[in-house]
Length: 164
Picture 1 (spheres, one colour):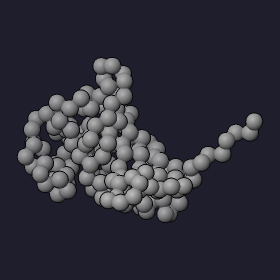
Picture 2 (tube, rainbow, N blue to C red):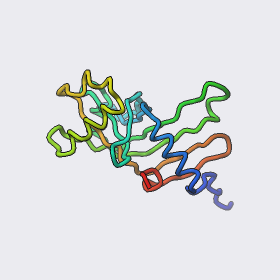
Picture 3 (cartoon, rainbow, N blue to C red):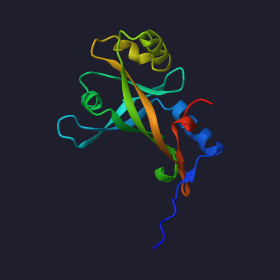
Picture 4 (cartoon, rainbow, N blue to C red):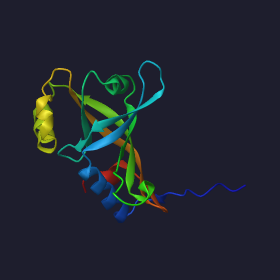
């Protein structure tokens, strides 16, 4: 039996533009992690944004189970994309990114710049961004799958997602 043809297309300019638009507009995302205690999958809704270089990032409380999960197992996945007001939600574009989380300590030289940038896109975070248990996590892309709607799906690389 011949091997099955990959149903996903290689990235092209249209896919890159759509993926980058989804990333730049997203202010929340779903984060899939591996639970630190049980090794089972878990998923959380997170605040989301891009750092000044276009790298996906989030701000996480130490009380959140997904922070412990990322510390124990930094490989995770993020999904962005919001269904429109009309039609089947599955025909609206969405992007799933496999990531490796990298926590940014408060003592890191870039912390102040990340804080200022985050507050520019998430102003309500001013209420808690300086709490001692909160930490920024960069979500470095490993690979991605873009579903642009029915019959439109692409495989993307980290380079395809970052500012070009």
